[in-house]
Amino acid sequence: MERVLKFLKSAQVYYLATTEGDQPRVRPFGTVHIFEDKLYIQTGKSKDVSKQLHTNPKAEICAFQYGEWLRVAGELVEDDRREARQSMLEAYPSLQNMYSADDGNTEVFYFKDATATFSAFSHEPEVVKF
Ligand SMILES: Cc1cc2nc3c(=O)[nH]c(=O)nc-3n(C[C@H](O)[C@H](O)[C@H](O)COP(=O)(O)O)c2cc1C
Image: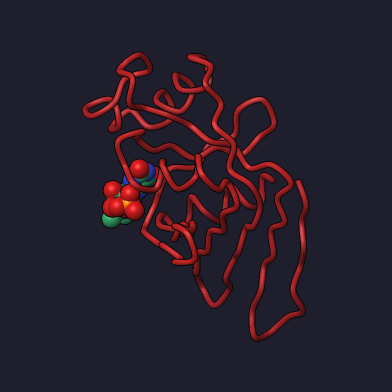
């Protein structure tokens, strides 16, 4: 999981895919954080992406850097604990301009049953599960 965190932080941007009915949806994301041995992302309840994850938690993210790409597929489950939100906001002080742990909008999701695959044209896929 540390390798996944390091890759995503270094890439700075990853693309988060969700589904809306039978329509795939994808958008750029940047937040990634480890809290209590789980990999978390952050969003706002007001966003479509949040509604999609609550309807169908199956999600996949993809990032690319230095000739290698990473995909993480699994379920994104909301952690509604204040301490989980607060931990994320402390990891991203810039988010505190827009979000706070008690604003009723901020939410964090962690990956459950995740399969992370590191791929490149130069090596066989390397799989990490967490
Ligand atoms: C580089 C970059 C990083 C972003 N990171 C996040 C993020 O971590 N969380 C988030 O909620 N939105 C983030 N956004 C904004 C979302 O991409 C944007 O709100 C998007 O429209 C949300 O998807 P939706 O419209 O399907 O709800 C980021 C945007 C950019 C350009």
